[in-house]
Length: 294
Image (cartoon, rainbow, N blue to C red; front, side, top):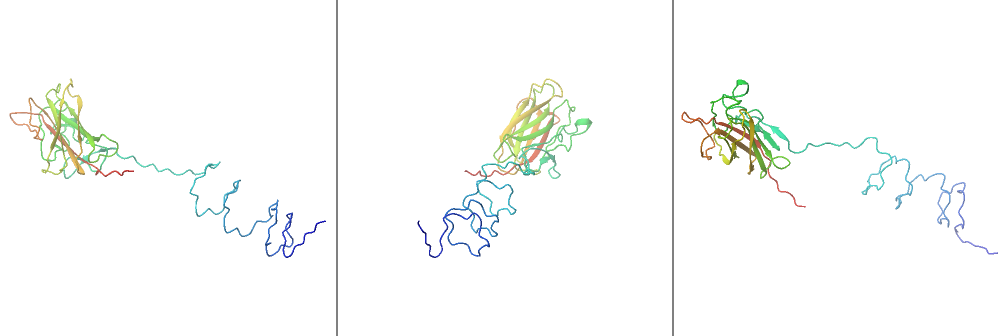
């Protein structure tokens, strides 16, 4: 027979099936050669100072009572079996842009959109011409011009020439910005076939009574209408120059022959009746910002 002699402490060759009783005050300095096949019936009162480098293979059925102070940086590859009872609240932000309806500016006495938008429209604020207007009344706030240019009172409403609305709109998504291409659309009533009716379009960034310097954009003829009182839309396109406050003008009139478009105001005389209607629209524009290159 072979005998084993130990001097000092000696580890057992096989684990104990049950803990010693009574419990020793100090742990053994030498662990058993083979780990215990059964966990201790009572867990440790004090957890280890360092967490395990590897998580357990089987997740806990119940979450911890105290959440971790440091959340994991890497999301779980497997989502939870049961979703949370309250979903994450989604806040819907308004999309940029949108049409804005103009209001009469008390200082400028013309329709104006005070904040930047994707489009700005007078709506029915300029319907009619001078003393001629809807429901046998005059045009609201006539003549709706920044520099005192006036309208003709000749003719009959819904038969003779008149501007019914002006809209300026961006050709790109979002609010109108410096440098953007915009479309100016005038809704007009042409006389008879409209063969001799023309709309002259202008713009300016100098907005103020009697201080306006109009820049000519283009002229569009009102032709092919074919019936009295039928509305037609005439449009031009231009690029917004620098400036946060802009204005457009439509000068709509009857004419025979060429006219000097450098004059932004057509006014009738005793010798010549042009059935002229002039309307201005002021609108706000966003400043162009430098885009970041990623």
